Length: 402
Length: 84
Image (tube, each protein chain N blue to C red):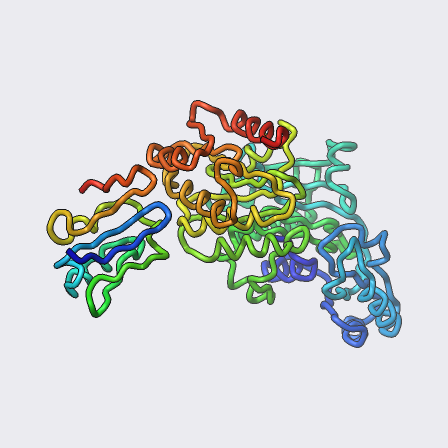
C-alpha cells in the first residue's frame, strides 16, 4: 500500500529525517493559515497517489498566504489521472543547492533489501541508471543481522562524497534504511534529497510503499496516520466483484479463498498454492486464454469458502467456464476444495461436467477428491500433468465452446 | 431403531439410539467434531445441516459410543461408510 507524500514525510520525520516545515491542508482557509505560520515562500503540492503532479498543475509556488489560498483552492479541485486530491501539502520553499537520490527497495533476486544512492536527484532513478550508471551506487543489507551504518557510509562514499556531506548523507541513508526495516516497506524513496544552501539536507519529496501483509503488524503506525482498514490504497478502487471476493474470504477463518482481482475475460479462475496463482494466470494468457479474474486459494479453505468463491466467479457476466488449477498442495485438501467448487457450480445452476473446464489439484487427499470429481463427471488430472498443460487444456475447451 | 440424521451434498451422518437421545453423548460429539456437525440439544444429539459437507473424515465421532452408533456416509462414493 502506498502512502501519500504528507504521510511518508511524517513517518520519515519521526525517524529523524529532516523535512520542510509545513502541513497538509484540506481547505483553502487551512492552506492560508499554514502558509502564514510557515512564513515566506511556500510550495503547495496536491496529495494524490499518482505521478505527473507537476505537469498537471498540482504543484504551485506562492509568495504570500493569500496566493497560497488561491493555489490551494485550484489544486483541491484538480483531478490528476482520475484521482481527487486527499489534501494539499503546504511547505516552506527550500533554497536548494544540489539534489541527490536516496532509496531502498527489496531485491527479490538477492532476497535482501538494497539501498540505492545517487548524486543526481530530482529525476527518475531509472533514467539516471540508464544514462549515467556511474552516478548510481547500490548496497544490500541484511534483514536479520543488526543494521550497520558503515554499509551506508561505504555506499555514499563510493560516489566520491566526503567530509561533512558524507556524514550527513550517511545518516539520512541509514535512517531511510531503518525506516524500511521497521515498517515492512517495499519501497522507501527520497527524491530529491536536497542539500540546501546552508549545507544541510532535507527530504523534498518522498515515496513509501508498505507490504500489504505488514498492515496488521503496523497497526499502530497506520492508526497514528489515520489510515483505516477500509483504505486498501491499491492502484485503483476495488470493484464490487472484488469487494464481494474479500467478503467471501473474510467469511471464515479457515484458509484463503480471496484476493480476487477482476478482469474482462471469459475463463473464471479458481487458482492458487505456493505461487501457483501467478504461474497459472500467466500460463492461461500464454496459451491465448482470457482470464475473468485472478484469485488466490489455499491454506485449506472450508467447503463454504470454496463454494462462495466459485459462485462469485460464476456470477460474473461473460464467464463461460472455470478452471480449477493449483500447485501440488500439502495442507490444502483436494477433496474439500472439490466439494466446495462442485457445490458452488451446482448451486449456481450449472452442471459441473460442463462448467469446470479442468480440475488440476494434486496432493493431500487427492484420491478422495478424484472420487468426487468422477461422481460429477468433471475432467481432472493429477500431478503428471503440469500446470501449464492444464491451463492449455482449459483455454482450448473455452475456445472450442466444449 | 430411531436415528438422528442429516444429509448434505457429499456427506450423510446418522446417529443411532440410544446414543442419539443421550445428553452426555451429545455433549461429547459436539465437543469432539472439529467442524461443528453435532450440537448438544436438550433432547440429545442435534445435527447442524449446513456443516455436514465440511466433514473432514477424521473419524473422531465414530469412537463416541458403541461401534456403528455413529455412521458417516460418503454420498459421492457409492454411499461407502467411513471406517473407524
